[in-house]
Amino acid sequence: MGISENSLVSAQKHAVTNILSSIVMESSVTVQSKIKTSISETIETTNGETEYSLIDKVAQEVIAKGESSTIENLSKEEEYWQEIYNNGKNEYRYWILMKMPKPEYSDLNPSMMTVKQSYGVFPIVKSVFVPGWGQIHKKENKKGFRFLTGFAITLTAGIVTQSMSNNYSIDAQNADSGEWIDYYNTLSEQYYLASTISYILAGAIYGYNVYDVISAKGGKIYALNDDVGVFLTLAQGNNQVPQLSISIDL
Image 1 (cartoon, rainbow, N blue to C red):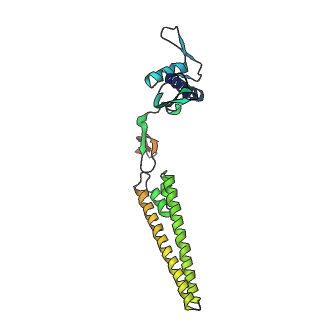
Image 2 (cartoon, rainbow, N blue to C red):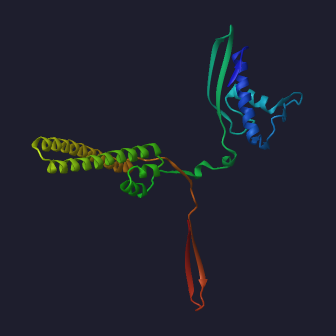
Image 3 (cartoon, rainbow, N blue to C red):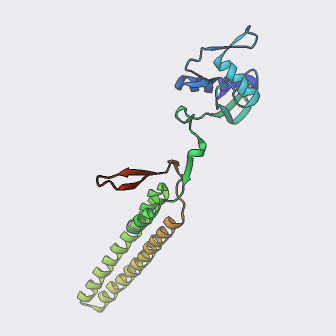
């Protein structure tokens, strides 16, 4: 973010300078095929008369073109600005979001990257045993915890209300008068109904949990394409009979 009372261009330059200073100070960058780590290094113009600091040079490029040819792979992603009236003066505010690959991925060939969207049967097996466990395995943590919490609450409610229904049924059998028998039977029926509804909800959550873990794609899995090689070797054993061995490098 950059702020200026003079002009929007000045606020823009401040914002770009701030983010470039952070990039260069936090990590090394590739500048015209050379690695540089200092923001004070200078770059000469073509006529050799004027020198610009690295930050100034790149800031001019970003403002003019939205990307830099000096710092490799640096480009503008988004920008936003405002003009506000503050303390009797106009104030310009400018925000910029830039992107640049991390150094460890700068030499990575994108064609070697794949997205594996299949998690196999493991999430299904996990969700069959514990609702929500499969979703967590597929990197859908919030959804997984919702299934787990919902199933646990409804199942616990079903067990508790069923136990209370049984207790009131026993109390009705041991009651001395018809009034108390009816009273306990009524409570027993109410808690039995509550337990039935709770078990139905728990079963619905469990069933939908299994359906969801089968149908949902889950989080993306990025992996490198490994070379798969098949090697044939012709060797001669101790019995002087030629032998052909096959090895597969996965």
